[in-house]
Length: 64
Image (tube, rainbow, N blue to C red; front, side, top):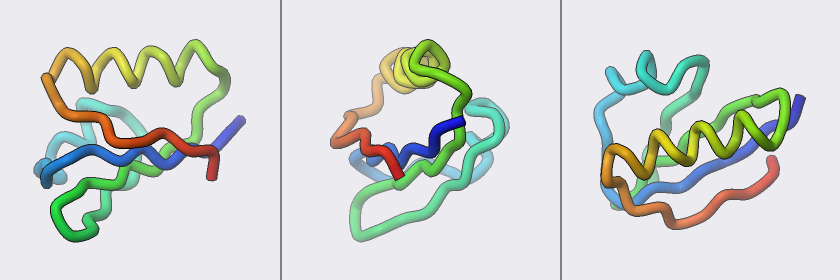
């Protein structure tokens, strides 16, 4: 398992956490920080696809 911090522009509602699965949502200035533990790269790509499908602006993806 690997942990990642994914930063998205804007503040999304914490209720979206259920849609993303087991994820922690925090905020910093005008950004949302998603912290998640994923089993592999393919799970990371699946999560990034969900972010894309919601038309959210991805700022960064970093191992944590």
